[in-house]
Image (cartoon, rainbow, N blue to C red; front, side, top):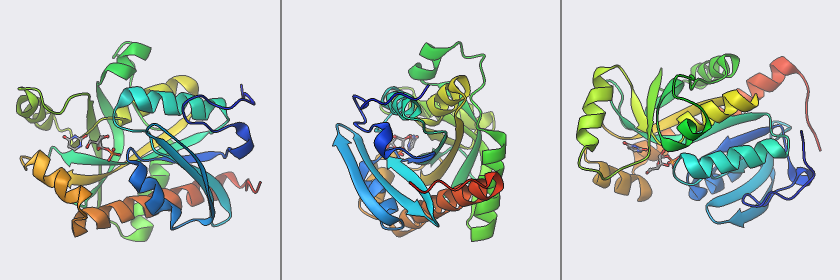
Length: 255
Ligand SMILES: O=P(O)(O)O[C@H]1O[C@H](CO)[C@@H](O)[C@H]1O
Ligand SMILES: O=c1cc[nH]c(=O)[nH]1
């Protein structure tokens, strides 16, 4: 059901909607996507939710920051769904859980460990947190076309950063073959699955496995070049994925 109503948190209504949305956690990343779009327009800024619209190769899309964590992301997903957004791609950052995944590498997520609270509030954790298969394939083809360094694998979505047990959690999930940690993908995939939204998650590695989390996130915020290159790659891969997806579906939205 598409409601013609201003959404209370994201502060967007169907008047400004689009079929596609890119979802970074960080509002600062919205501005960096904006530079790549035609006819960019600021829509709203409320709490952690900063939004713009624009066109990529003639296709209209929204870019909305979700803030940190499943709870604020869940609200963003539901309110975007209420205004008719059908395809949502997270463009996030992550910490590596593997010695094979390094700063600036992209992780194209094929499943998320639901170690967050939000997805469990929706449904028992036996329900799988997986992306839309065809959209995931589009992200893979997109990364191949653009020649970006990527891996396909699982992420663990978590809610905490600073408990006494973080290192223990990371080694456990690393030993189970999980490639990276983030905080929003499980909520996106779970809510997307339940609501019939097509979802994908593209993550840029900003912390090495067994690296120094605080120092490396500080470096990202301060503009370390490999991390920013990874961010630019994830944005371009996401935009090109939308183009690939739209070409297959062959319906251009041009309002
Ligand atoms: O850079 P974003 O997309 O916010 O993603 C990651 O960064 C934040 C933690 O630093 C969490 O939101 C985590 O998922
Ligand atoms: O472990 C990590 C590192 C970066 N970002 C996260 O969400 N988790």
